[in-house]
Amino acid sequence: MSHNWSLDALYLSFDDPNLQTDYQACLTEAQTLIQESQNLIEGQPEPANLEILLRASEALYLKLWKLSAFASLTLSADTSCEPALALEEKLRKLQAELTVFEVRLKRAVGRIEDLVQWLQNSRSDYLKDLEFALEERAESAHHLLSDEEEILIAKLRITGSDAWETLHAKLTSTLMATVSDAQGQITEMPLSAVRALAYDPDPEVRRQAYLAELAALPKIDDSIAASLNSIKGEVLTLTEQRRYGSPLEATLKEARMSRKTLDALISAIEEKLPELRGYYKAKAVLLGDQNGLKFHNLFAPVGTLSEVYTYETAMDFVIRHFSTYNPELGAFAAHARDEQWIDVEPRAGKVGGAFCSSLYPVRQCRILTNFQGSLGDVLTLAHELGHGYHDYRLESQKLFNIEVPMTLAETASTFCETVIADAALATLSDAESMTVLESSLQDAGQAIVDIYSRYLFESRLFELRTDHALSVNELKEEMLKAQEAAYGDAMDPEVRHPYMWLVKGHYYSASVNFYNFPYAFGLLFAKGLYQLYREEGTSFLPRYDQLLSESGKASVESVCASVGIDVTTKEFWLKSLDVILGDIQRFKNLAEQKA
Image (cartoon, rainbow, N blue to C red; front, side):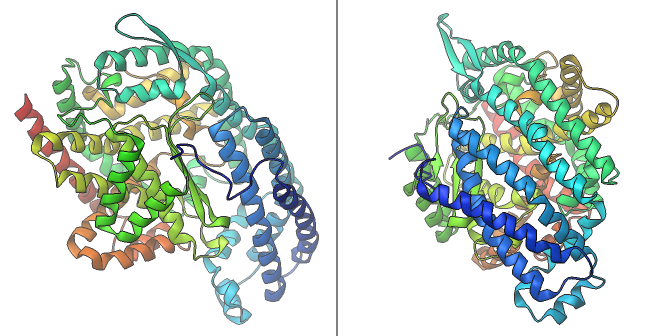
């Protein structure tokens, strides 16, 4: 079985005649769409005309999705692929030209005085089904600049923030680090592989990998700092021009989430931080760290479950437990494995981390991991397959109804992680359970405590960037301050990671800012949903699947309310955090027994 994904469902190669045909069709259809959208320039749009344009744009966007996915996924697996880089560049230019249509559409919908009544009078089921998508476009019209400015911004992004983002991916994926083992053997490894050693059971391997990473990063830190400053500077400029109060305000609009909900979430996390740190303190004692947990021990495996998984055994484990919960979910995971939708191990030129990419036009997905065989890697597989299952549930929706905000995008993935961890815990002894429990708490700690540090860092980054471009030393200093605020005395102040701003790709997108708090939201919301599943059993599954399938058609608060959850209250988040704290207490009890 191949451990590299196949993209044949999209195109066979960059010379594939179908790729060339689709690209040429996109060029023609884009110009036609732009020309026809002139009918939207003045007055209130006619329903029939708007439906024709939306259907035409849908057909165009599906082709663009296929082309863009083929280029971006190829680059994720091989950042030096020149045909992919060339295609991506051409598609960015074409998408910039389509800004004309998008701006005209938003302005036209924004001129409709009573959109709900207008839709009712339209007699178009197609348009009625897009009510929320059209409402969003009407609201965003208030933040548009002139047509000429919007087009210019889209074009300048190609050589601005998009180029800086590409540079970050290129430098971090090709950087090699020198790692020493206990015998003094020197090995050159790509950064993604070095970072994966953080999960190694050998403490010296983890320490040497950490030192190797910190030694290698200065080779690219000036260039990456320039990237970060340029991207955030662009965001601040556009935020001001579009009359948003801050990048956070703009992000919340895009996330379909109120500030009240975010404040409730952050306040609950801050209240529970002292108790959440109990996990790190207990782990530090287990590992013999005297002054708090050392950063290179953050992902250290503990317990007696020493099994190193192959990809095959990991997938068998995930599929078996998915099927116990929901046979349809298990069948989906098996299909993803059998059809080569997953790119598995780290290698030179491949980007680090893990993600799932929806291929909605062909009703598939692709998953990238950097699998090394740890239990954490197994949970990562479950997480990304959860994203894939979410995409699967969205397949019945129209294209304009599948855009899920980041907050809800983490729901199914975290839910699936919980399914795997919970099912495994039910079958193991206390000694073995400690490993599974600890791995689950690793993820929870990353999604809550570490995410809190990233939220603080990015907030401070935007604040300082309004005044000046930050130096490498300033970025490192602000990252350490954020880690201190989040981890406190639970992490050794002498062994932290000042370069986390460099290795986390989430900071390097001008179109997606604050790619941090949605993870905390997703984890805790998923925990709340899992509690409902425990209480209601299989009768909960249809309601859960319905939530996933309609998560792109309403605000965060409305989607959550559909399953009886009020996320605007601090009380909900505190209850979800109590679920995590219960696991921490269980871990502490097991740690005391072991000690």
